[in-house]
Image 1: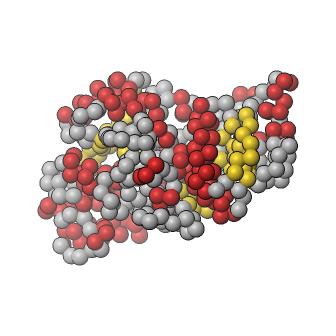
Image 2: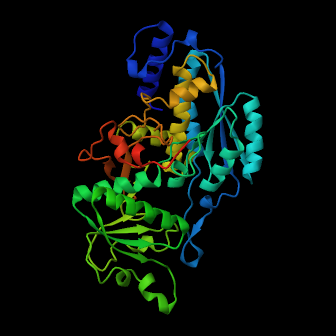
Image 3: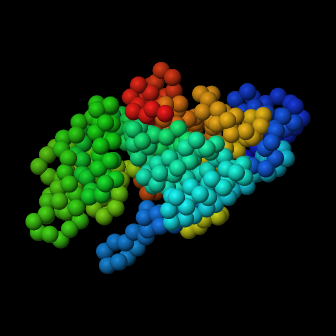
Length: 406
């Protein structure tokens, strides 16, 4: 944390201790009123064998990327909470558990609940997150999803004991959709990779296209194969010929074919989606709103890794819990849950607009970044898109559309 940020946090805490006035939007409860919160432990769980973090290999077995787990982001968030807590007599700690099954994690968390741990940051795939939430139903504990974008988790498979700081797939494609509408690139050729997540991403983009007046001129399968009978599905020039379009949308989570699409399309057109211009919760090149300071603090712990969307989601999850403890009058689970879900929550996202959790699906409202590997090109939502309550709700599923029922 920079000296300026540390001084700002210290000033707020000092004002609390002295009883002096601070702005209403950021005014915590006085230290004397913080009850039963002297020791606050936040849980963190992950799967040992999570396939999302397996090394990704390319041609000739050369490894071209490994996705960093989000835990370092949680550690940076803990430091923020400790900076304020130290002045207020609150000791924040982080308890981590890793296991090879959700049942083992459920047993661990049940033990934590007996020890007073009521909020657990969860780095889990969608199916494992649902299983864990169901296993813990009825217990005074809330899971915070920091890595699964699946729309179903905010829809038909939503759970009342889960919050989401990681953006939904609908939010991510809506950020792109707004950008394409603003640029008037309204005719999109869609290329879909072979993985199930690719199909979910295309499904989300169909909804985005309808929402923002875009046209999908055609959807085509994209494969990386040496099969001569599938030449048109593995050759970028061939798979992008025969139709007119303003932009190519690629959904390829395996990053096998998508990395070859920019600069090889049949028509000279921009590429967006999982390659080219990519929507993110966070990227290392965001340098506004104290973003550079947060990035540097992460890198101090994790080099050669840089903070990614999962790392940011874990950071803001711990930030939210710490803020709730400091600003409520006690550490009671119900009081903290009520605080986090209130409409007036003013959570610093380090991306401009303050965040809050949507009541209808527990998704954190947040701006999103549209980035290339080297730069942030734009930030969504765009001023051209307004909402009657909160402009951040132009990204993702709004209340009238939700399929979530707690």
